[in-house]
Length: 125
Image (cartoon, rainbow, N blue to C red; front, side, top):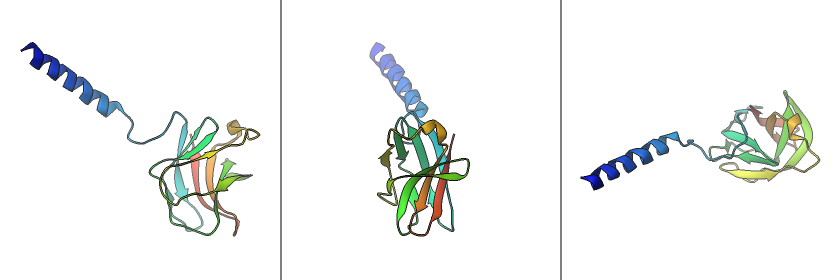
């Protein structure tokens, strides 16, 4: 009988822990959700964590020429382009150079450098 009680207690504890875990991959950074721009569909979650910009597993982008990952603040893109977007879907990380103060950033942008237009913006909380 003791074995059965221990099994039930362990099972209940594990079940509770499973529901408490977050439903997405990510670190301990500031998060935001992408909104498409310039008639493009950009969805998913961006994260600023430490000196990294992370696009999480749910990231999708419908495609365009020359997309780059960039940063902005309050609706204005900064001139900081981190690097070309590696993939139109899924998790990916981009290092932020040390000279960029991430306290001055509250948006992650997907930017078309060729046509100088935004493709998606995630406002970071």
